[in-house]
Image 1 (cartoon, one colour):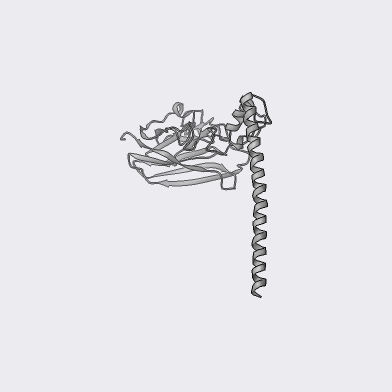
Image 2: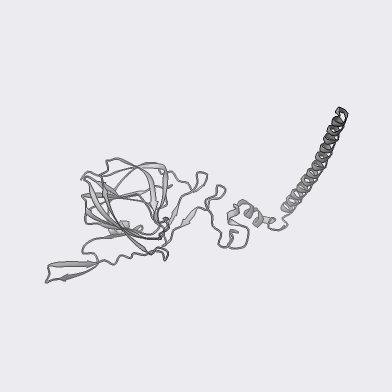
Length: 281
């Protein structure tokens, strides 16, 4: 019995060694074929020959792109038609086209587009002109003015547009009770709404702070001090801070269009937080 067991064990070990030998030979063959292909590719690149999606300057440029850009013809840079970059670490194409025309950028740490935004900024007075690149400021008397009820009511019909994406069809009205912020204030988070403009109407407020990031949370922000007469509309996709009250507690009404999917708001941390200060009342 012992002899039979030893014979079976010997045969089993011999079979395993043979199988490993065949597998090793196959692996060596595969590695040799791979090395051969790499050497052939290198020779084509040195000679400038155009291999299948590899040779020449176009091939070298395509290899530098992440797979999300593809290699099919779709633009001068070799990006595939309809390809969507999600912010890969190997390329610097991180422009995120926001719906409605606004554009924000939030590069990764390794991107060459990353800008330092650390420091201190001082908020300036809000006017419709300075805020025009980011949305609109509505005030009484700025628009089509008409008097009704024998002059007892003066109505201003604002010409402010309020666009929204066709996917955002649900109107939403929120009321915000906001405690006053203390100066100086560190800005830690930014948000945007890619599908709709967002309207803020002060109902009870002394002064309030409006902060936007023109180039996204990785770049420096700008800040404005608004008053009780200012109605602010953020354009779709504009990076901005949440509502901030100054001096006294405040109450705001906010309106926007929602998709119903819960993706109406994008929020990101500020990589290099900036401190904002504002003048005394």
